[in-house]
Length: 333
Image 1 (cartoon, rainbow, N blue to C red):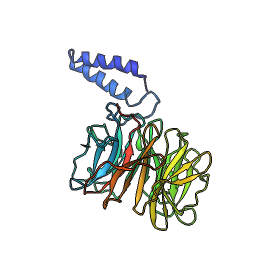
Image 2: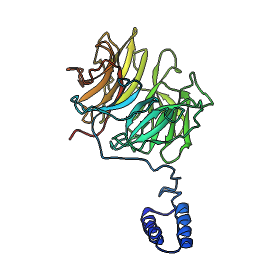
Image 3: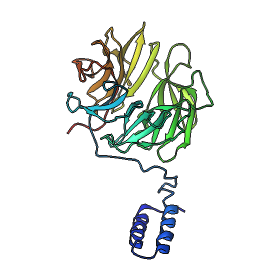
Image 4: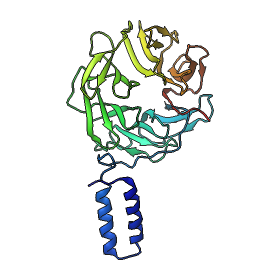
């Protein structure tokens, strides 16, 4: 059976007290406690004691400046650069939780490509999937739902459906792969829509080029995205905090720029309009700025510009590639 958290707190106190009494009573109470906390209040299996820290501001990004892909944090003014991971294996694809207290990311530190959760200081990394070390089933690119209860991910786990092995899927934080829900199509990049129930994703499986579509995981229904975009290759969509705008990476005639779609009017604006590759847009908590990666200085750096595309500035300024920024929903102190 499952019980609520107040009785569990009481039971924990009883167990602690039992350490002062007989071993038989202590063992009995521990067994009982173990059976009861196999569920959380919603009745789902409680598999992970996930790490969490204080709400933290700043922009996560991936860099090879120390030899391989690791995760870093920098504030929007370029200060406070902090290395969060230090592993010989790849750490990449960082994503903030909606409350800024947790970071989801992809890592190969346990052998295969799995999804991990850690606190904003880079501590207590917990593997949600725990595939065997030699597993060829890879998961990557986690994105939190607005409620902070599920992650949308890529999975290369068969069976394959669609036109590429990168399948769109959802996992619950409480059950990992046991509760995986898979879309009946392939995806290139994605974001949760403001309703928190559907996912906007880019896919090469709907006509020519790479187009946007919407997945409703409850009905497993895929529909086209409106308004339709007259851009052949669309990737990395990201909604503004108020849902009024969609920033995305668009490629026209081989050149990638950051575009802005106004949802109410369908108006599309090229924000960067630069011959370099501009990619991976991500919004500031107040919706006034967009961070992105660009190689306009000769290698990939993290830049910030205002929502109109003006005043771009280089935050990272390092000769090694800095890519895949993700801005915390927590405003700076």
